[in-house]
Length: 81
Image (cartoon, rainbow, N blue to C red):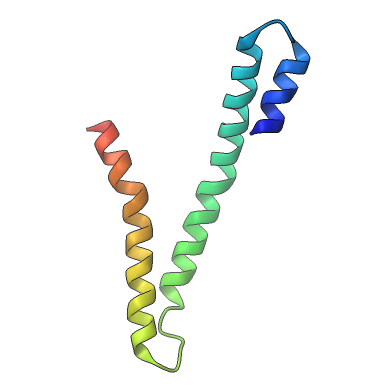
């Protein structure tokens, strides 16, 4: 994100808007990459939770996955409701 902001300033050094546009572009690219990766990690974690010797670790793992999803869903729900 910082690199995109710096490139925005390099493109037009006198305008703060170009830096903000570069920052927005960097944030958008980060979201485009991060959201699918997070979904993939969470689904993989959920499906593989009980592939361990002690079943208690599976319960803990699924609990962590639920907390991870909640940490994304609750702020989004508050913003859009």
